[in-house]
Image 1 (spheres, rainbow, N blue to C red):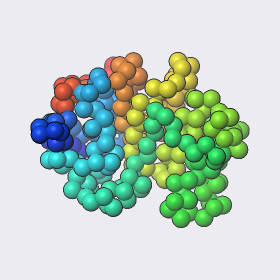
Image 2 (image 1 turned 90 degrees about the horizontal axis):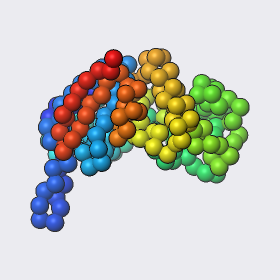
Image 3 (image 1 turned 45 degrees about the horizontal axis):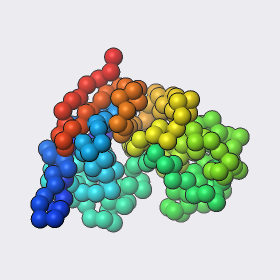
Image 4 (image 1 turned 60 degrees about the horizontal axis):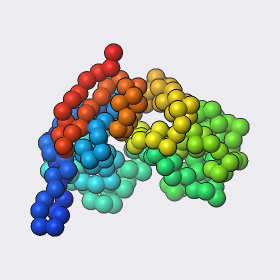
Amino acid sequence: MIIAENLARAYPMEGRVLHALSGVSFRIRRGEYAAITGPSGSGKSTLMHLLGCLDSPTSGRYLLGGEDVSALDAKALARVRGERIGFVFQGFQLIPRLTAQENVALPLALCGTPQGQRMTHAAQLLDRVGLGDRLTHRPDQLSGGQQQRVAIARALSRDPAVLLADEPTGSLDPAATGDVLRLLDELHAAGHTILLITHDPRVAARARRQLTIAHGRLIGDSASS
């Protein structure tokens, strides 16, 4: 599903060059559940931006589902993001004035799916994540864990090739963290390809494979027992 070959990203900064990522290579198979972990400043966020098609590498190649997306322009990257990647963020990023169902349906509205079809699909996804009785609740009427489950349902709305979860439990208490991680386990068991970005080794251990980044380089690649 994912092939990264010698990915590098450098940024000019005040007369010097910051090498945020240097020569990172790995492969993620379809249906795999992997965590990218490392301390703050390690380069994992830069790698997440590249894998999520939010940025392009300075050098190297990135293939997503066989397509080389490393040299695409901004418009083409936006297409890939919308069609093939489902994002889950630490801060949920739900629209406050919309209900849970409307938030989940929004990506489908943006791509022109008829209203009845998108609302039905959104209801099915919310039921799948255990929120079938919260369709009309706005984000401020939901707990943090429930908001994150809405965000996961939204990320699944266009049946993405990869679910990219960036610190998805970072804003949650231990009970809600457990709920979200169990949901990711269930999605993996159902065949979804999941990339989990986290600084927390306990959260990373829930994945079946851990890729460790430090100083912009891949320093570890191990499967959990």
